[in-house]
Image 1 (cartoon, rainbow, N blue to C red):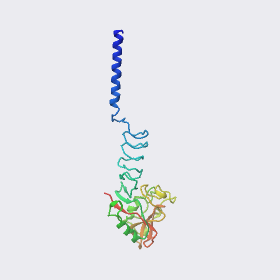
Image 2: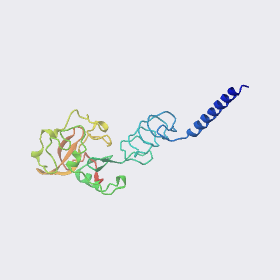
Image 3: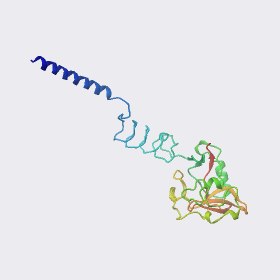
Image 4: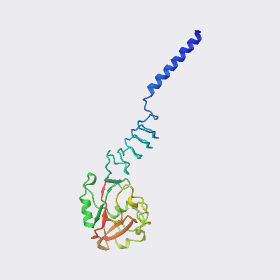
Length: 241
């Protein structure tokens, strides 16, 4: 065999062996292009172990397209803080703007006294300091109705709770059941329940000793209702700060 040809063949063989060794050693690397271990391709930047494509930027171990690495359970629930790794829906929802925690599920068909007792005795989420919200707090969870959201034109507040504070803006918004929440209610998507009846606040109507302010979330209207009406709902609140 020609000596030059033999030398070239040896060189090519050496290069091929080196390439094979490099490929094997890099197969388990964990850089930004690391291969993940789910059943189909996804477009995130970290390896994860779910079974379907998602587009989040952090490793998690669920099968859903959630937006926060803190939400590490098997359900695509609306709260990024529900990190319970089980199939049970969250029972509380926290408003990160006001730092108020709310019960996801309301108490239904209660008069004012019963509603107050319901909240005071609630143990939702393992907490024991639930209470009925003020009208300001209740207005803070109005969604997609600027007139009665916090700072809106409605004059009824904790500090102005007489009948003269009830102006046209307190009538809320249309259409009825046109909100972003469950069943078309004008509240955030993290809350459940229906809004066929108003929700109690602890704020009394200073013009009528038997009445209390409510929010009718089917219209996001702020309405004064006699406290003995037993067909209203209540959503309890506590401080999450």
